[in-house]
Amino acid sequence: MIMEEKNIKKIVKESYSEIARKKGCCCCGNFDEEEIAKSIGYSKEEINIASEANLGLGCGNPVALANLKKGAIVLDLGSGAGFDSFIAAKKVGDTGKIIGVDMTEDMINKAKELANKYGYKNVEFRLGDIENLPVESESIDIVISNCVINLAPDKLKVFKEAYRVLKPDGKMYVSDIVLLEELTQEQRKNDELIAGCVGGALLKEEYLKIIQNAGFSYNILYEDKEISKRRQYQGFNLESLKVELYK
Image 1 (tube, rainbow, N blue to C red):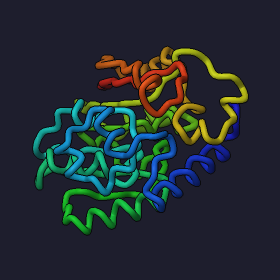
Image 2: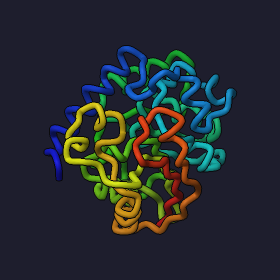
Image 3: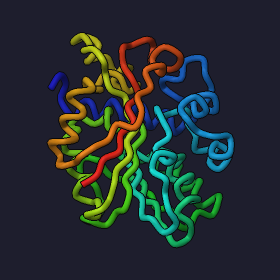
Image 4: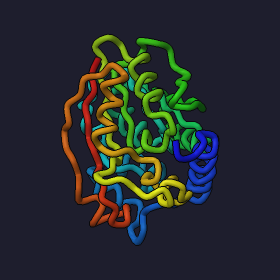
């Protein structure tokens, strides 16, 4: 490991705490939050559902991939201010439930405030580490994650935890940044790149191998290679990988 896990988590936590307080993306460049959301697959209707929770983060729309049904119990890994959680809450309805987990207290507080403001009764936000989820085993129908696992130092732990909490027929839908060529040691240690979803990202083949090592089978749904050139990832040779995982 290039950097100690606690240092990586400290960088990520401090960066995303600042984003939560200021309502601003760390890697949006010249784009605003709505433009970013549209460019990675959110409809205008979805953005309007939870516009205050849209902080210009993410690299896809895992809720759209998941095709959620009424009554589903959904876990949102790295839920941030609740953008995906609130969109998912509309789809699962009153008989369903969304659990958002994030390690950043400022994000959790913001998400809870917005849930109260707009009267979401089927959403719960929990402070916790996605490498050690505060969630019961085999209690979740669908896990979603949007550009978050790349921030975790131990990605195998994250996928093993997701496997643990999923019901036997459960599925996981991930949109994440993966590298198409290796970074330099200097880039791996760069705080801004770590917080910006690049410095901690894995090569695509390594990422997919970890998914298998956690016990999952998978289908690659889509690979967005344009995200590097057109948007917020500074021209690095990477892509946004959209994957369906199942036990």
